[in-house]
Image (cartoon, rainbow, N blue to C red; front, side, top):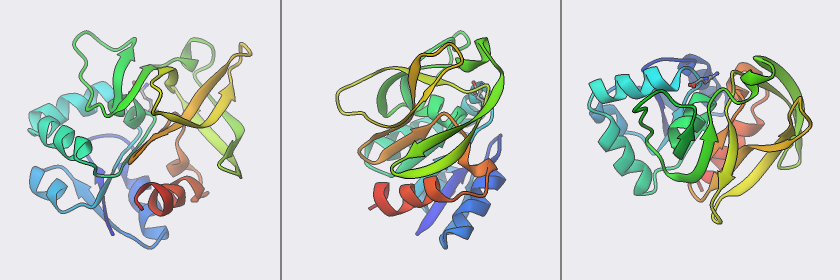
Length: 193
Ligand code: GLN
């Protein structure tokens, strides 16, 4: 499979490496012609406001929305989760997303308590160490969204941090920053199926 990584800003190189380590071909996506070559797409961690602005400048917002809504398997980590959310809280004024997952995501949600932290979590039966950096959490979700993993916040509340809606998946954390390929493998083997 050719897996595109939106390469406008953020940690797209780490996702490229994880894709290759899983035995797939990785393609940096900055143009519509590159998007058209992909069978699936990853939206990296970074800064969602910057990624959205650059996507607009490159004329990618509508083509991305179209491919996502037409069924292209897409995975977003951290800023990528924000970009896949239909609704966001604590965005900057006028901040756009590509949307696709029927959920409300709060930006920098943990940041109000701690900026970054690591936590052990269970991801579909796989125990992993998740890295959270100014991470969003899911505050409200539609009936078609499945919670894959949740975490207890420093204030003791549980919040979903990995979700799936059909061909779309999002995590608040960054599996691309650890050497554990479980999340990428789940995306390729289960979500892209
Ligand atoms: N806080 C960032 C944003 O709003 C996301 C942080 C990240 O991707 N590590 O886009």
